[in-house]
Amino acid sequence: MIEDNDKKYFRAAVIWILCCAVFRFFYSQTFPLAPDEANYWQWSRHLAMGYHDQAPLLAWAIKCGTLLLGHSEMGVRLPSVLSMLAASLFLAAISGRWISKKAAFYTALLTQGIPEFNVGGLLATPDGLQAAAWAGAVYHGAAAYEKDEWRQWLACGFWFGFGMLSKYTMVLFLPSAFLYGLLSSPRRKRLAGIRPYAGVALGLLMFAPVVIWNAQNDWNSLRHVAYIGGANESPALHWRYIGDFFASQAALLSPLVFILVLAAWGRFLWKREMMKNETLSFLFFTSFPMFAFFTLLSLHTRVYGNWPGAAYLSASVMVAAFFSRASRPFSPAGEPGPGRQRIWKWAVATACLFSGLILLHTAWPVLPVPGKLDRTATEISGWPQAGARAHEILKTMPAPENAFVFGLSYQMASELAFYVPGRPRTVSINRWKRPNVYDYWQNDADLMGRNAVGVTERPGDHLARLGQVFERVEPAGELDIFRKPVFYPRRSDKEPVKTYYFYRAYGFKGGTRWLPPNPSDIRVSKSR
Image (tube, rainbow, N blue to C red; front, side):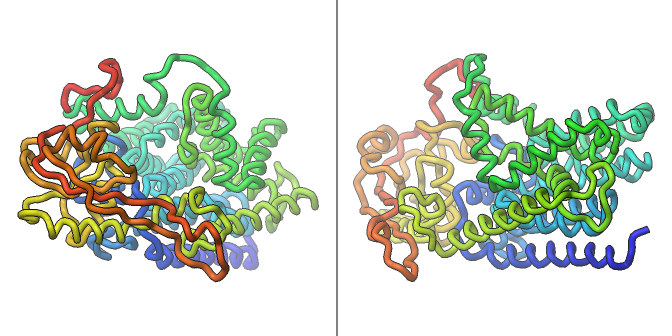
């Protein structure tokens, strides 16, 4: 029986998680949208059952967020703030129910400090939604295996479907959870009944709109996923990317937390008695297989650092169970010794420090990082100024009401759509880049003969490229973007972190669609 003092720890965990969520909510309005965020916001203006690049739930959620809070950074990011809140509460609930109430507090301390979770709880990307889905599926999946109740299996299926609508990597939860059931002697009998499969059926039914959309669009999402998974590359294994993969994981989690995650998995595999603990086993199987999958994939192609992010949700509970000082010994792991407790304290402290510095620098760039190497400056600064300048130039065009604004990438076109006053429909000329969602929203026939204002981040694009798709192009000026000034002098602040180049373009001739350099490219689609 949990003592009253233990319950105080769980309440403290919930309060801490809520405080962090409130902070993220208000902080989310302090910096402009990143290019991918602006792109997902554009999706919300073109609601559909599926999209070229990713599952559709984020677009639907952003639509709700902007209906509540308007077309603002806070409105766009609201779904991510709420999703990470839900994920954090689920993880605390897992610790509180199956480990101890004090472990729930330690889990909350850890999860609210990890840089990747803070970024996922702020930026409008699918990762936040998937985090809520994965954590919810883990909680209800563990309860379903324990009690074998209909409501728990269906709840697990719901969160699985929610995750599939959020991000396709959620599919890895299914084999992970079933592998646990197959290898667990006490729980294997659960898989002989119909209830687990009813949960799976519910999740797949929720995912049906995406399947329908893909069937109607030549399976273009599947083509895109296959491409970024290395399907166009020769089937060779090499060491070229694995170092980058591990470095990215250490950076996103913070180095000490990443080491503790690996140590927790290793400790589980090394000590046979731990494998007999059903809680640890389920947490292991809902974390390590995803990490292992992407580790193996990195031997073939480049893996983005955030792809295995959901694996660290269950892993964070394992880390708290093994290395923190719970209110009562977690018997399979034993009471952590002084050495492990010191590592735990340093891991949590450094994770919080890294997160704090990242959040501080994003809104107020105080770190002594050279401007050209400062990703927060090069990726998110200057977009409001670029939108305002494009609007000024647009007003000087002949028949400005009939002219359009364009970029040479979906990122640029989306940022302009958000930050040009009036939020106009923008065009992405994909001819030289890659297929993307703009191919479904625009066609040359609607644009033929019209004038436009273009923005690029490369000088000379009007000579090298734009002359192919417009009858006449002329430069319309440049805009240098500098970092915000800070309280101490920096030589690099005197140099622009990036420059926008503006063009007046006349008489569009056609050519917005991607031209594949290789006809055998897996992304080549008959429907586009």
